[in-house]
Image (cartoon, rainbow, N blue to C red; front, side):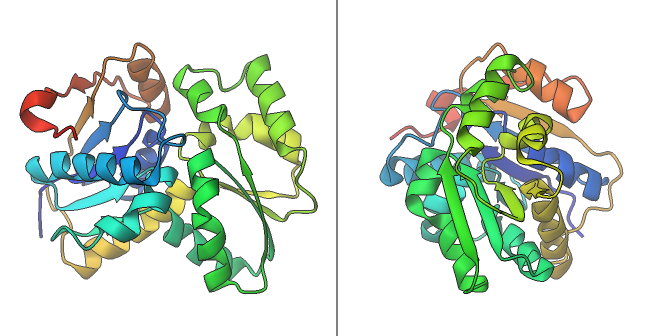
Length: 267
């Protein structure tokens, strides 16, 4: 048994959608969350930059003595996970593989993906789906405006509705829609109105939570301490971060600003 916290890393507040699912699945665990708000969004950055930023986030969490790390960011998972997962002696989970494993069980073949421009450009979701489901038909659409809107708290207003409607127009006869960026579950209501009830909307956090529980069991890392704790950090003060995070988690969040010169390596 291991009472150390689980580390969760994202480019901003979006990874809180994953954290919420994991907290519900693992009620006795403690967590440390890092949102790299100073360099948000990741979707427009080069693969090399995303790898370095992801390494920085992982090293920050390792210094906090976490026992497992979840990359709760679609862009970082698609661009950096394969490169960095063998650099550190700690289990690291991304958001793509657990989701694809679930979709494979549903026998649905017509799959839509919305994500950041960087994630779509990398074809990370498409490659993972076709590797597991060779006869799948995958339609992928980059939605670069959605994550910034979520960071602003604009997830149910007219602007969000218009943006979502425009982005989803090209989809044709999909059975499943993957919300390939962890910010997007905050837009679920708006997306449902546009995509229709027959399409299953995939919140990737649910399947990351299942995978996290499996890894904890496999490596015997489960906590037996019921005094669960949550520490939240960000790399630059963002006035909407605490507001959106608190609303999502259901408790007041007061994030701590990372003292980067001492604890966060900038390259």
